[in-house]
Amino acid sequence: MAEEAKKKDRARWFREMKSELKKIVWSDRKTVVKDTGTVLLCSLLIGACIWIFDYVLVNGVQLLITFLT
Image 1 (tube, rainbow, N blue to C red):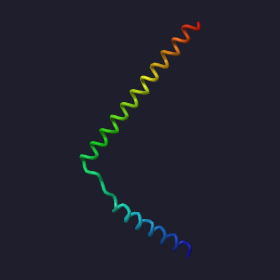
Image 2: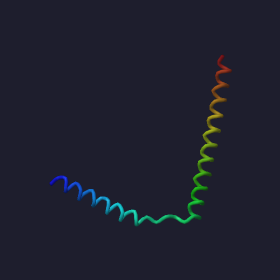
Image 3: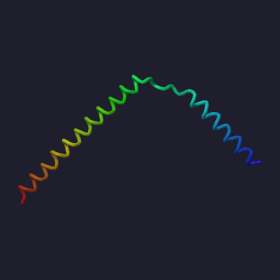
Image 4: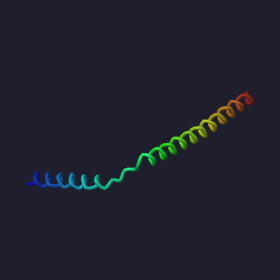
């Protein structure tokens, strides 16, 4: 009897999942391209900031080491 209950629960889960998947509203191509561009631009800007910060810190530490030795 427990097996029947598990099968019913599994079948119910799949029906509910199918129902939820039908509710998905996909973005149009224009929106996807715009959002992708925004993500790429933000990633590049953040990467540039990290690179600059790293460059400044490495040179600062090297300068300190040079003065201390």
